[in-house]
Image 1 (tube, rainbow, N blue to C red):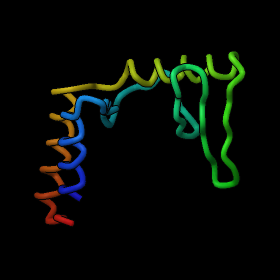
Image 2 (cartoon, helix red, strand yellow; image 1 turned 90 degrees about the horizontal axis):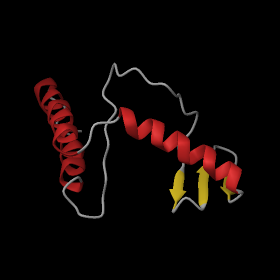
Image 3 (tube, rainbow, N blue to C red; image 1 turned 90 degrees about the vertical axis):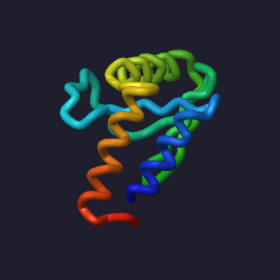
Length: 99
C-alpha cells in the first residue's frame, strides 16, 4: 500500500494532475453520496452500482460545480497534500504493509 501512496505523491508533481487530500478528522460542510466527474462546467458524469448518468442541464451541472467547490475548499493541496500522503505512506511502512 505504501508504494501506491508513493505513486499518488509522484502524480501530484505532474503538470496536468491536481490531487487534493481531505485529511482524516476534517469537518466537512457537505457529504457527497457518490463520486462524479465535472467536465468544463458543462457536463457531469457519475456512476452508481446500477447505472451511469450524464447531466448537461445547467441547473444540474451548477449543483455539482458548487459541490466541487465546497469539497475543494476543505482539501489541502501541493506540499500540504504531499505531507499528508507521506505520513500515510510512513504509517503503512511502519505497520509492515509494504504491498
